[in-house]
Image (tube, rainbow, N blue to C red; front, side):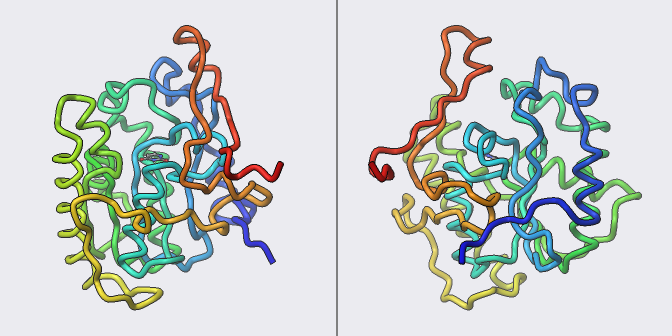
Length: 270
Ligand code: URA
């Protein structure tokens, strides 16, 4: 029996998805609205205890239609595993559409129109689940959390909150000059401290001794995205640890318009 994510057919998510904002709220100069909104990953059946706020969908997510399935997702799935959270989580992003240029992400951090729809998701998720902890991945997600909590119209939430470095922090920090290993150590130290705090706040699905990170991810710390998180029928190599989607094209416009999907060699049955 294969498992899969049943999607958004039922209330309250059917209306939420049906009423999603488009280019009137997300300017196409700053967001890749042409690839469509990507809403969530994880449980929508009322069983989530950990609510995660990521940043924005990337290339792999544009194909799988669920968030945090690429490098960032696999790193963070390993964090959830260490917390003993194997199924009881739900993830949304700060932005429904992929940001086109990091500046756009910062420019819209406190955009009230974008926040209004994001608050509908956050309110719905804390109302329909017993959320024990919210985890913000990176600065933009943390700003999104703060804006939500400071809005007096928001649904009540009195569980824990952890703001941790974004899973791809080492990659972005090294692109702007920080040594990759130094940035990786910073990430894992930050995650260890959050794990220590959160393990006292979250009821695990599976009780495991707290196994903290070392100085770099080990292969087993990059968890596989569960089959149950993706729409029915997606091939298993879309959950593999290899890069299988990339933006390609001569010139900015072609690159923005093209994602090349390639089955990893060792995943081919031919
Ligand atoms: N993919 C997502 O969906 N969110 C992130 O924050 C990073 C990658």
